[in-house]
Image 1 (tube, rainbow, N blue to C red):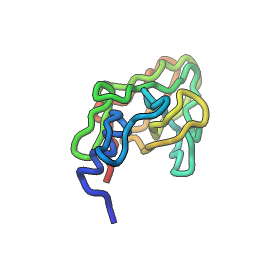
Image 2 (image 1 turned 120 degrees about the vertical axis):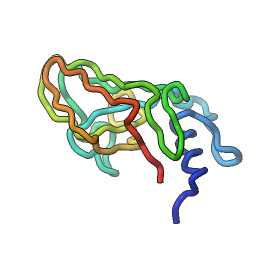
Image 3 (image 1 turned 60 degrees about the horizontal axis):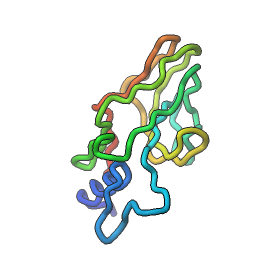
Image 4 (image 1 turned 90 degrees about the vertical axis):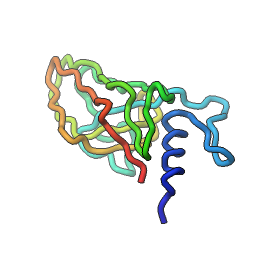
Length: 142
């Protein structure tokens, strides 16, 4: 079995734009998330991982908050992309190779990993590097 295309799109809109799915799910709650947090990883965090699994550790690295709105994420055709480039803090020290990115629920700490995947081109981090994910970065629900 698989999800229908309309539902796949609706699910992405629920997660990334906080848009309710009529008669199934809504964003109501005592404190719904207003942001999702994008992270960089040196290896695949895997389905059993959390936001800290293989997370980047270069000096000055931090996750980037992206609003759960259509201004933060573009959802179309069962795919989601950032509405603007996501630029991470410039490295002030350390070297590592970034091979994966992820989206999760927390600004720091273990946090729930929602989606993760490999980058089409790895990013070599050295002092002065400001890694970014462009609007052509895509998560597909299928």
